[in-house]
Length: 356
View (cartoon, helix red, strand yellow):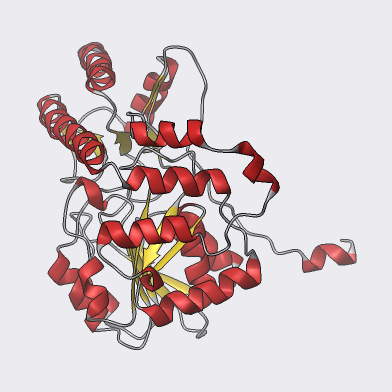
């Protein structure tokens, strides 16, 4: 081995969902919103002055931070923004998880959590979900260097009641607790009000799901002024200009169209609940997801077999070849038309498969 190779940091990287580009495909594998962003976003794109691109963007991302503060009734000093919630969470890891003690997160959860821990050299201990794929709050009472979990969880879609979230935070006053609310707009109550009560809580959200802007990469966190100040110190030491001019304008515009946002979320929730019932009638079981996706298992047909059959039909869902969940598929909620095609395929495939 050459000497320089001994100093390379080697990690197993996060595996993102496949991004196929095929005509007439149905893409239900990456939890993207099937509807376009608000018309106000398109208006902001058309009005954008391209000459501004010769200038560096505002390092404070002020126009977006202020818009978020106004939308959620917070002070701008309580808001941090980044290039998607992944960037925000990575900054949180760098800033707050430095005690040398293991951070805690669920064993079945967003698979970037352990990747960041390995990249930054942070010890961690994953806590097993119970038999119903629910977080056990008692598992987070032990000594630790920080806590992070999604709510609703991914890929399960299971929502942890706000009282249980508060219970976890209150039992860990000496470490930072991060609640990753990428899917909170599709169901459940946000932990945001708790930042007034707990100075160790950060609540992270994103434009990628409910606001139909995964391609723009906008994430944000809420916390008390001191926590946000520490995050900004690390951000400015890492890359001061993390968000571009165009994204800042479009993000602020999206926040101004509350009616469109609500209507889109309501459509996805209605489709999700209908598809739950139809999948159950086909012999599928699943946790009661409050996200924009379902985590399904068939009583007779293996998940891997269904995954491959769907893929051949140009219907893309997510399969995780991991312990405890290797017989389940995560299916994003698409439009009613897309979900009807998905269900029709399943009906025909299962009818043929079960006959054989």
